[in-house]
Length: 105
Image (cartoon, rainbow, N blue to C red):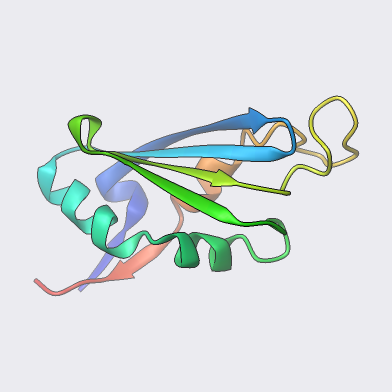
């Protein structure tokens, strides 16, 4: 069965210098179990291929049913020096929420 990330979670994103910070928050415990299993740092790195040129770090926040990702070397130097259209990474959560997972029912 295919599950769209946007159907089980919402997200926020922003900048930390040249790194983007993307938080994905599940709506319920079942959704958190899905994102915890399927939303790996490797999968996030592949999703942002051509945008994220550094390491992706993943942090689990189970009490919030959330995962936080730091995408290093993503913002072209950061908001004050980057020529990128989204130099502060505000659209990256929306982009990640487009991801789909194949899960067992």
